[in-house]
Length: 121
Image (tube, rainbow, N blue to C red):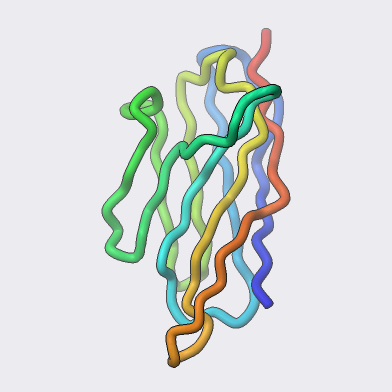
């Protein structure tokens, strides 16, 4: 079984920065995809950034230039550096991952428990 554990959320003022981290543990053969989503109160969960096995990153348009996703495949971790945060980005941020868990190609997909990011003065 694979588990994802996030850390790094908290309270930050508008214009401030936070760094989120997500560590995966369990039986992992290789990484297919890792990323971050967020869900604000009353809204649907939306993709913020992903970094697949190829390493080619993908960002929500509104965060381009401010957020940076990175991954350490050897440690099965993914991080999200968030700069110039806006009040509208107050949300619960979820780590997402898809892993191959054995040489036969079996996959696991799942979410972390979420970490709260509060942007407020």
